[in-house]
Amino acid sequence: ELKVEQNPLFLSMQEGKNYTIYCNYSTTSDRLYWYRQDPGKSLESLFVLLSNGAVKQEGRLMASLDTKARLSTLHITAAVHDLSATYFCAVGGEFGNEKLTFGTGTRLTIIP
Amino acid sequence: EPEVTQTPSHQVTQMGQEVILRCVPISNHLYFYWYRQILGQKVEFLVSFYNNEISEKSEIFDDQFSVERPDGSNFTLKIRSTKLEDSAMYFCAGLRDGSYEQYFGPGTRLTVT
Image: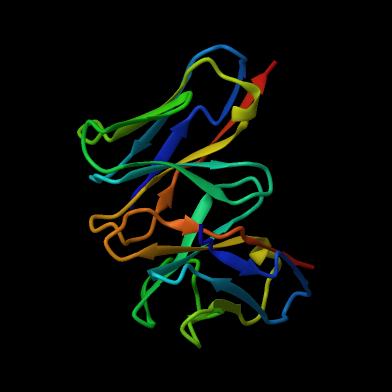
């Protein structure tokens, strides 16, 4: 059974600081997704990583994928308050149309 | 930009009642999914649906649950006899052929009392 683990579960950081969220998964997969969820809201797609070594950046967020280590990271640079949310990684199947298996989520709070 | 829509946004029901949650996927999507999220927990896969049949289902998706796409647009999740533990947010998602990115609807919050 595929397991997807994120750490930390909770992260409180000051504005302007950098931090990294880690996502480990237990079986081989080339497809890794990052989603953002605001309280009571749906899942907003942030990044889709489709191969080993993939790196994508959008604003203050950068995601990377190491399929050999079964590890993805979401790096936050110079955090600002509106990045406060819960971030989920999810692992996809071999063919792209299978279910997503989600991680436990990281609740990020940015303190002014 | 087209969006996945879900109705109702919030449903309150009594234990033992049947509920139907509705989703209207984006028109060019071919693969459909239901996920649920118990408050404060992670998102869990329930079922995937393609070509008018279930392609995969999780252990959660027992005989109380069913899905269908009755008219080629709506995609529904039926829970026959709700239990307290069915209280959760239910998300519908869709995927177009050849893509890897699932688009999620806004969710239906189901409260079973």
